[in-house]
Image (cartoon, rainbow, N blue to C red; front, top):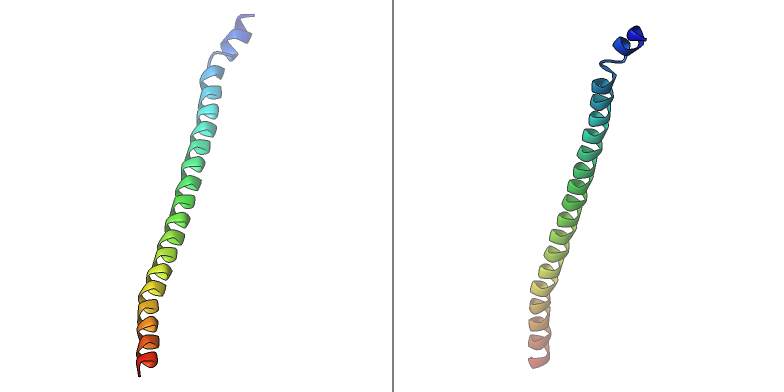
Length: 72
């Protein structure tokens, strides 16, 4: 009986380390995937705003060209 207990003495620490590693990697994976989603969304937002600003800016010029054509 004593031999069995002495063999089981460090098992709890080893199980804790294995569980902690899994928890650490799962947490890291969640944060990393969240960061990737954030980067993709910010890139899409900046592209969308750039295209919107370009259309608004060029739209003013096109409108002015139409007005000049109609006036002449």
